[in-house]
Length: 66
Image (cartoon, rainbow, N blue to C red; front, side, top):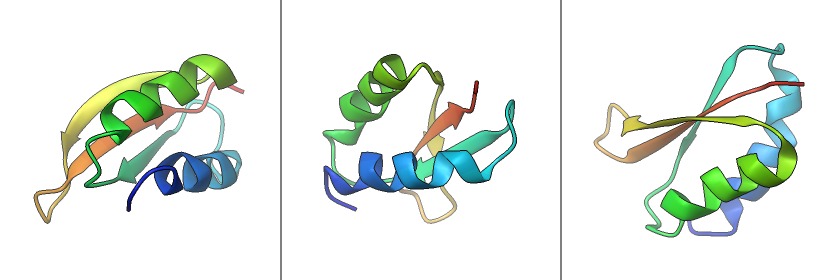
């Protein structure tokens, strides 16, 4: 996904997981590397970090805090 779609989808889906669980955002747009952590700061969610999805795409991990 290209930005701003990753954070738009994150905002829509984070409420679907229980508090304390992790949402993974897979995005190939390099802007997601800064956009996802910034979204977490603005929304009071925990940015866990980055790893790699099964297809080799960057994956950004967000823990729902409330």
